[in-house]
Amino acid sequence: MPPLLMSLLLVVLTSIQDVDPMASATRGITGSVKVQIEDGTLRGRADLDLDSPLLVRVASIQPQESGSLYELEFIGTTPGLFDLRDVLVFADGSSTDLLPPLPVQIVSNLEDHAASDLSMTMPPATDIAGGYQTWIIIIGVLWILVPIVAIMAKFKQPSEEPEVAPTKPTLAEQLSPLVNAACNRNLSISEQGQLELLLYWHWQEELDLGSDRPEAVSRLRHHEIAGLLLRKVEAWLHDPRSTTPTQAELQDLLQPYRDSPGRPEA
Image (tube, rainbow, N blue to C red; front, side, top):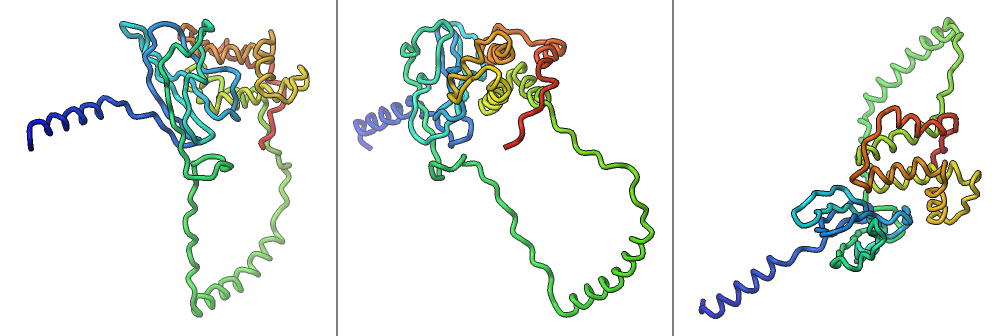
């Protein structure tokens, strides 16, 4: 190979290796990307909900010599190209336009109206072994068992113990696993949306929150009593300075919801 052609090939290969591949994730499945921030504290926009095309949260923060290395987890509900800067904010209110572009791609093999790309497969049904002889044996066994079951039914004593209906979980019991996950910084974006939905459902009528979910969650967050739990959860997830609460503190946060019925399953 001529030396000039060899040099050009090395330049092309070096350029290809220097290009970082765009972060991508399948619709409904979490993806991640890392970004170096010299100054400031990043967090996901609090005004977004599960109906938003793209959500993001800070998974971890690693201090570096010049700033911090953020690991961002994102999940999309709509296929397409997005910029994570549109769903991020700085804690001090400064613009994320100062950051370099953070492109991510959400892909899907399903139609847009499908819930997600997660799917379940059913095992194939097994065929019952047939045959004339098999059916003769089955009928003979049933013919013997029918009188035996009838005799046993006559001597069966009625149960004196009343059936106990299963107890429905309280709102505190529904919130408890989500709150425990949040204080350990293990709450996913979907679980955070579920927690916001439970609080929104509980306080909607009392605080007249209305049907606009983002505005309702914002009003809920700023309410002195109703927003206490939500503010604590967001602090655990987005503020690295927040401390892990004790079990006593968690019980105090859930106390207002212990006598409230849980949200019925959809």
